[in-house]
Amino acid sequence: MKLLVEEKSFYKAFFSLTLIIGLQNIITIGVNLSDNLILGGYSETALSAAALANQVQFIATFLIIGCSQSVIILASRLWGAKEIHSIRKVAGTGMAVSLLISCLMWFVAMFYSSGLISALTTDEVIIQEGAAFLRIISCSYVFFAISNILLATLRSMEIVKIGLMVSLCTLVINVTLNYLLVYGYLGLPELGQNGSAIATFISRIIESIIVITYMLKAKLTLRLQITDFLKLDMSILKPYVKIAFPILLSSLSWAGAMAVQTGILGHMGTAAIAANSVAATIFQFVTVITYASASASAVIMGKTVGEGSLEKVKAYSKTLQVLYILIGVGSAIVLFITKDYFLILYSISDEAKNLAVAFMTILSITVIGTSYQMPALSGIIQSGGDTTFVMYNDFIFMWLFILPLSLIAAFVFDFSPVIIFIILKSDQILKCFVAIVKVNRFKWIKTIEHQS
Image (cartoon, rainbow, N blue to C red):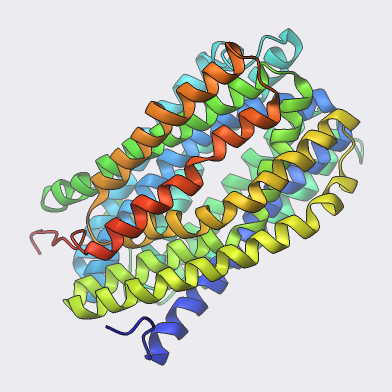
């Protein structure tokens, strides 16, 4: 089998999807970066409080995105098989599950906010401000769930431009409101980090209105109606849950692990929290193409499996792995070269800046591993139907290896934040060895039965 496929249609689909999704990701990260910069310019305490509250936010986000990924995996197969009517059932099922999860997360974040933040830091001021931020932003979860499921359904059918337009609108609205509400311009009250949370909440509402309007008014092949989301089709529920359950557990495990990681660094001082927040935000910005390639791969591979072209599935997976490595090397170079320039935009202490530079230097190495194993696992293996492997792989690496070692290093041996950060990110390289074996054995190609 050739290492690279020669079909122009494959490359056209991959790069067009990756480009548009990547632009959408850039805008989404731009929203997070603007929040980060505005709060970082306001005060280090505000930045740290929002950073810790966002760890709980990430759990909700990861779970909702997990529901969306499950929709893409199943719906893209149905798109390849030309079963449009079944895609409507998948969208309705995904929406029901996503709304249930978002409501549960809102309840926890709203009524247990202080306890959640206090698990991540002992600073009373940050706990108080972070809890207030979390209570406000939790109100956006339901709207975020609605938008994500609708956009995931469209993406499974290779309709991605609307997602880009929605993200652009969100960026403009969020940045404008952030600036006005955080600092209190144009006669508005100065709300600090709470102003940032309110801006996000309003942006999510407008975002969902735009997507719903598009779905109802646009002349799409799918022709979704509100009634499609008011009924739960049991013939689709079983295969959806079979796909979604491992993804949701994996998302919960990963988001929880990120919160524990932040908590470990959080107990090492405000400078470590701020540095980790800065490094994480910039890392997300640099790796937009990596995450876009995973999303594009999921659509392409799911569609190809749905078409029954198993030889193409194998050929495409070989080519994708090469593309992932090239993307990783490019991302590493960009992150290493630009890391110092980004810090000019932040008003944080010299200690936090020095830690942020060290963290980003480490990430400029591990990003190569991230760019290979993450899309290989979530873009190829999950879309092929083997969602349980990714769940077990993430759990074993993170909870049985990375986190125990990090806790021992931090609280028993009292290692520096830099050494702790190296340990926390080492799984990004180690997972590559597992991914390369798993992908190239092709035992992840599984059929998903459903009733039409």
